[in-house]
Length: 411
Image (tube, rainbow, N blue to C red; front, side):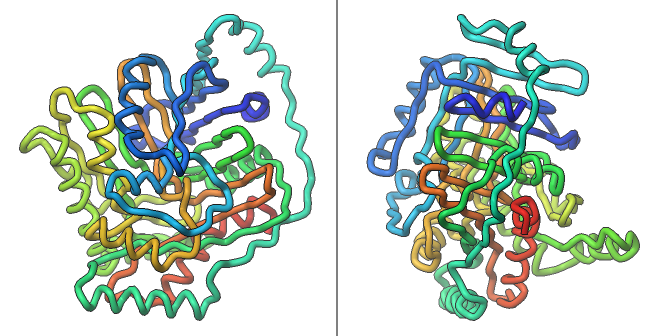
């Protein structure tokens, strides 16, 4: 399917990897463009209102993404750091072809003159030919000492009362490098199959994503968010030790306090768009196991107010609290001050909207971004900084989070 989809200018493939995590579909994909709405860095004002108009007119399957820097419109902020990938601020498209895949069937919805039988035969007859390229050598924007020094500066801001928690990220990158995005994504999903994985092609730009985190899901009038805060390394060779790691995470006061803070933020965000009294925490500080890590995840749900628009939902909830911190606007200013690159699609979201207005969007983490025109490759990782954080441990957490992406690239 990936090899078939990559020949389209735009292709979005979302894979649940058979996790029973309030899933919408096992796999769903959209390929080609009938209609599109996209906004660049220079024209993002009023983009959400215009997105509402696009969605209401399209009334169809829609796939696309929201970049982190949509924050600049939502909170009247700015971004001046460099962006080596350069995805649009947001882009949504009505696809020529929609694929819905389960264990037992493949459904194909097409826009004429596409023929579903012909496409089905093409998919079945296709073969995967992997191109072999030199392994990219990742460099870091921060030295270890520079990262530790920056974390200590952020803790000074916390001590002064500027913020309580901040998600601080660093970029690992490679220049003048060539990869086969499909081959890399296949490697990544063998190493780290996660419930919100995505392969996303936007012309010459690619996202290979193995995210374990959901941003928002809407079904009918119900909406849920499932923020992650709290990470522990797996010990796969020793089940007893691995179980102890999981138990230790569930009892770790620092990790619990981080998650609790984000739960409160998400509850407040959802309360702006949900009926009074409907917002509740369904799963509090649950610990879930993924291939590389154990993660602490909470589920917050609510019932949307009648007539709420997509722009209102995004204004209330984006960027997600798990990738920013508290208070949200102030930490986004500090993120811009102390990080060295724009996050772009990292910390943003990829997903779909169905013809009934239901949707499901991930959080873009544990991912590789690649610009095939400039041959620039980017891998980002971050962690939550609190006053009690140990900077050296936060640095090691970043290295843990990029380990699957490095392996997928051949490192």
